Length: 173
Length: 465
Image (cartoon, rainbow over all chains, first blue to last red; front, side, top):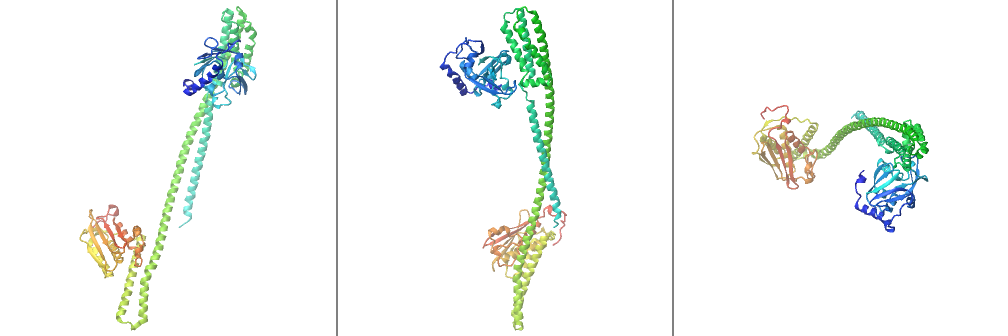
């Protein structure tokens, strides 16, 4: 995966830093979760809410701007409607800064994703499919969904491997 | 010229070109089609993780074992294996089974013929939910029931993976074979295209050669016809004047009859004789031209005294034109030279008569002989005559060509061409430098001995001149 290893050019890094930093100035502290934690963001964060990490429960994730994405996937039949926040919005809410994330699933499946993906494409953390809340039994509660139908270049094995389901942790590096 | 003869090969050549073109096109189309086929095969060869059912099955197997593990720990009273942990492992296991029952993975499972068994396995695991979620420490019966369900599941998943893997291997082998065939076909077509391309090139090359030949012969024909026209025009011009002189003199003599004094009769008869001589010269010259044209000139070289030959030619010229001033400086010439005396004498005579003809009365013509460094003869014929315009200098050796400055002077335009032809027969040449109004210098060069190629018969025995 050359994308993950090669650092992005300086200008893009700065732009991405600014993008992530923008909401940080408006509200300097992330609220603590009330319900069960669905997703933890760790690593280089400016807005943690528990120790050095930022935890999100369902309410917090659903409070972020909801994005809708209609797409087919390799693991389902037909076009499905996915809903959830953009990955870049979640990372911005945690004040994350870096070049790539290591995504870890509930079953310890791990994959590295360059942050550039989330900037170049509207990748979402899908929490609903066809209006139904995703559960652990059905690739939930959080599934990284790429807009593969809108971008033909995403239809290959490299990007397929980044569609991590049952996502639990994002480690920012 | 027979018209049907060249038509047949032309038709054949056309058919050959058409055939080669068709073959190339056929090969090329086949090549493109095979390339498309190969591309399609390549796309099929591209691995797709969404279809890697083997990996998904192994993940499900792993989750089955972890579920069993957490259940056993729960029954054994491990505090870490609480209700939530059991629920999570069970949910993960179910999700892993569901993945194999939809989308592309399902298609692959169906190919193995195990999709219904897969459904049954899933139903069996789903029916475990109440027992698993109410699992309490020490519940050995439920543990046994779970073991009895999860172990066969693991075995079944291994079977799924196994069949998919075998199927993949068979597909891959088939694809490889198909690709190998396609590559071989492509190579064959490439060779075919190259071979037919070469064939086509050969055909075109031969056509081109034939065309060049045809053009050359056409050019030759045109040249002959041009020469013919020039000859006719020359004859009608040159022969008319002496004929008119003869006619008018004869008329006068008839009209006056016996009243004409004897001196005038003599003068008139002299004029008639002079005109006759001119006609004879013209005729000889045209005969020469005809012989030159037909390639009928006999070339018989032998050792001879070149200076004597030239003197003879000068004497002959003096006879023809007693007023001519010929100055001979021939001491520089080689004493003996291997050449055809008849032809060389004629060539020299042509050069000398040419110089005399175009010189004003009283202007001398100089013949200067020398020996070239190699021992050959060099004869310069220098006149102070009308000269030749610079733009026409290159054409004076063309047959029937006459320079602008030659107007009004009898001549056939053959003499110089003949002289040059003779010189070249000997391996030498005739060249000219000239200035209009001041005079010309014609230089005849004859090499000492003929180059070997000139005399392949080896007739070198000297014959006394």
